[in-house]
Image (tube, rainbow, N blue to C red):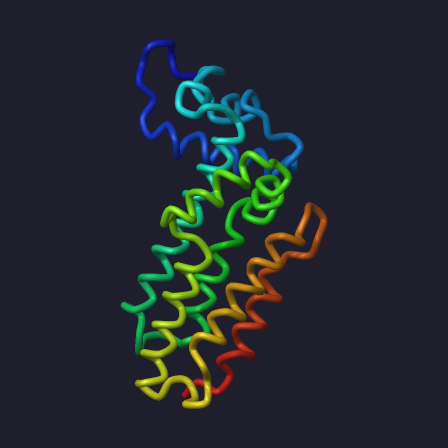
Amino acid sequence: MSPRGVATPDVRERLFAAAERVVGRDGPGALTSRAVTTEAGCAKGLLHAHFAGLDEFVAELCLDRFARTAAQAQALSRRTGQGTVAQNLDAVALALFDSAGPALSGLAMSRPATTRRIREAMEGGAPGFTAIEDAITAYLAAERELGRVAETIDPSSVALAIVGTAHHLLMTNWPGSPDPRARMRRLVATLVQAEG
């Protein structure tokens, strides 16, 4: 436990990681500010010192994880011509399911103030599914130019199918549901099966 008055390094990430552990282990209903700070091993008031409340905290956590995945998707352009197209796409698509992704998405959707904050942030330019879709589209177009995917593949349609399916699986998955990663891998393999 961090002593009172002593700065806690990387507070946001420490609290975010703790929240993911709580939700992943105990489900979305167990997420409280006290559960997060206890899991993080820090002072009980730390979450409220950095966030206006639990709704804002959950929104910021979701936005942070979307931004990470969007950055990973944008990095796909550096993978053009390397590895397999399916492996490269899997890395991005499956990143959405890392940690407690499905449970956090469900939690965010059940909290109107959180949902509103996420929507407002995305309307203001915060990266989300659209940024991921755009990056996948650009990557597939580059791979098509190299002949690593069939000319008949429409990059924007494949990107929409990947992102749309990920969104669907995130919103319909709950504790006890089968792991969505296998379905996501099968979809990606089917969509790019004509790769060269």
